[in-house]
Length: 214
Image (cartoon, rainbow, N blue to C red):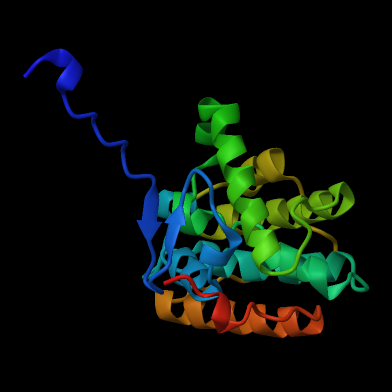
């Protein structure tokens, strides 16, 4: 066959089928292809610290996210429910891309961050939040994220307290945490439960089933 008549090679697949039946385009994610059940299922099975933690169960991103939301409320008790929901969802994109440790994210550079931001925006829109989290809220969530990381590092990941203080800073005054990693099924159920409590408090109305595309 002459070169000019060769069949064009199909583009690599850039979507993932979820257990809900949704097919999420990873390069151009649509909010309508995002379901909280898929997020919870994925996050409950994504291990923090690349799984390098003690205990029978990995410490999942789902459980981490629940703790971060709790810390946010501890630091700012009068925070609006929608921003507590944003805290719960702060790592939701990892249900697709996994939990990469910070040094590796830095090595990958801006392209990875752009991809992560695009997916996060789609998740926010799906659940009634602004596509971009306001900077003060983002800083608060980051503070809570680092506080949770301090407890994880010292209790699960083999860091000394001095090392954890150097990398993550001290947790907020008055907040104590003893971590017992949950099973995947427990983390998944509690994540979904917390989502529904916060979304109802924030006045979020789920997209009707009529919008389903499958």
